[in-house]
Image (cartoon, rainbow over all chains, first blue to last red; front, side, top):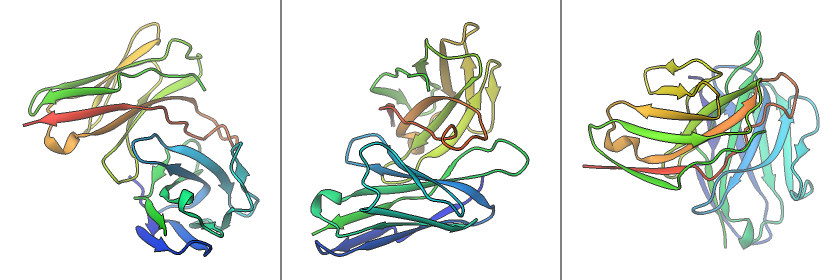
Length: 117
Length: 114
């Protein structure tokens, strides 16, 4: 299947700082990317959907000013957690989907574990 | 998207077939059944999907009942590496933004025992 790479895989930051997570599609062009958050022993919760070159669509209850999403190219989307606090500690996962010729399946990155201290 | 119901956990012996059920009684005619799995601390991995016919690939088989209200994912010869949370998701296939998103339920935690 197609490869989606996230970086970093693990990050620890101080409370009040911002953290940027990158999501890259390595062998296909991702016109749509999705960002999920997962707390321990819980399922994945969709945060937002982004299309290349346009603003992200956030799910209800997700603060767009806190979780900044940029999808500037067909192979890269970034999620920036601004002014991070301990409650933002979580496992963040991106998913990418291409759109060549029709429907494609979503492929997921390996996830980024964020710990805010 | 239609909701799905899965047992929270299952056990299976290594080398045996693992059969994971999923109920989706409110599925619509244009909705597909997708299966993903998530191994601990990794991103989800696509397994298989189907509409109404049974499907098979190198990873698993998907059996969908004739009324499409339930399905079963079959791992024919389970190994220890198949221990994961398995998610059954029902979704319409669409090129419309937003309609493409995958909404995850709680899934089934499958443990393969030696």
